[in-house]
Amino acid sequence: MYEFSAKDGNKYYIDLDDGQHVMVYDSSNSRVGSVTLMHVNEGDWKLPSYFYLQHLELGRCKRLGIGTEVFRLHNEIFGEPVVAASEFGPRMDDGSHLIDDGIPFVAKMREKGLICAEAGDAEFMDDDY
Image (cartoon, rainbow, N blue to C red; front, side):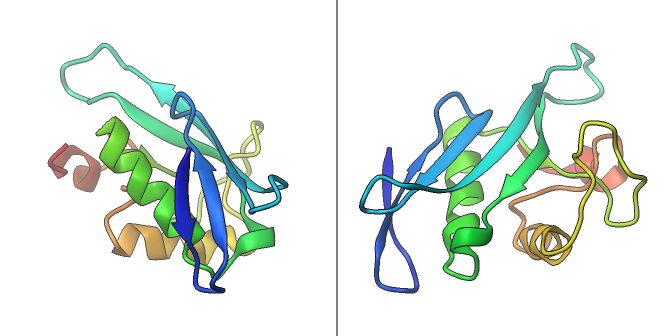
């Protein structure tokens, strides 16, 4: 569990577990957010293993820097890229398509280099992981 001092001056705790189930708790141990990622190991030398963003629920702690810290820590600890659906992609059966606040959030994380382009895209293939 990692302690993080957010922009609101409060401490939050990020539990990265196995890298697939990330939970965010406030100082009273109440869950205020979660991120679900699927670990993909293609077994193909052309594509590295990566984590695919399936579910993003950080609305109760948005604009506090917590989401950025979640993905910064995830990259630091697991060392494999995180990818997300395309901003203009189709509606996915598993719910992993981007909606509402997820669209600008993922765009911002891509700008910061914390979330990569989709697997198979040239940008993903060129990343140094």
